[in-house]
Image 1 (spheres, helix red, strand yellow):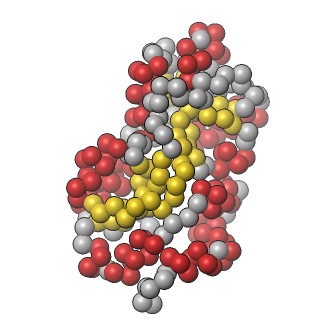
Image 2: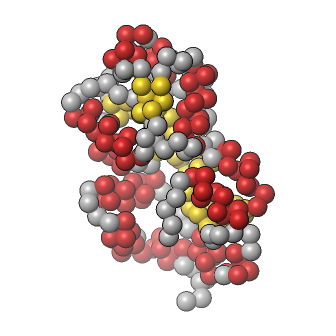
Image 3: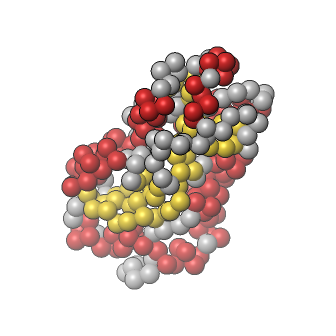
Length: 229
């Protein structure tokens, strides 16, 4: 298992230096990566359906649409900032386009990291302060805080997305067992959220995954169907 940002993840798969990934957000968030590398990668289809990306705020804030951000008084209370994540992430690219679409030139999209964004959000939430962040579902922050997506009447973030499994060319021939498991892997947003909440609560990813596997034998057995162990 190798943890990298989106760009190196797609590039590594296209070069064949990694075998597969289960975190391609399509058709919108990772559209640029798909256009650049798609011809060199095999798409095994969606492993999780019903994801969403956009701008989110705490439910106590009295705004409901991205259009509302153009209010100068609101912009001042937000210090003219929207809290983002790592530069180059798909949602950051989409948010920059949304800035242009909605005329949010008075705002700065603050580059940080996923962890730093959620820390800023949690701090503001605990103090009932205004904040706007780049957000996606599934994510543990929606389980731990009462948040809402801002409506996107211009469709800058597109419709709900899917997370796809992608593999390198030749994997099916080189390692048919790994290929079959990846091809058969699928779960729900609720499944992922359970694991994410446990990790956020202090468990290691391995511990949280082990617990989920033990509690979901039918799904795991379906992933392993036909695999020669």
